[in-house]
Image (cartoon, rainbow, N blue to C red; front, side, top):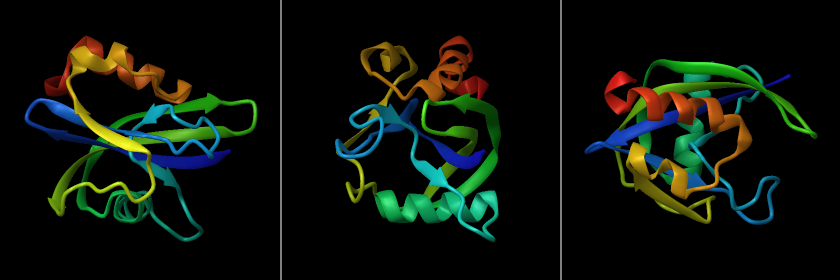
Length: 131
């Protein structure tokens, strides 16, 4: 099983989503910023590194929002979503095709990676304040 960390970054009642590059598996689907842990990294270290590499931002990792396991045809992941806060920089497109700050009400307008479905349901039920 592959351990994956992701960040729920919020700003003014919106949260950040990123569109995967077209050449990657699940290309053009939307997701939370993050990625796989590298050998010897803590979850927080991996998330900080991924945000720096993918968006050019520095974040502070907060509490765990949700953890789940998802089985894709090519990989099984244990996905841990943390609350996070941008402490330096503005997101840049270093890895993704696009990114957006969206409201919970806008979730149905985007096609997300299947692993995020449970997280999105929780966000739609409880909102960002329930996070």
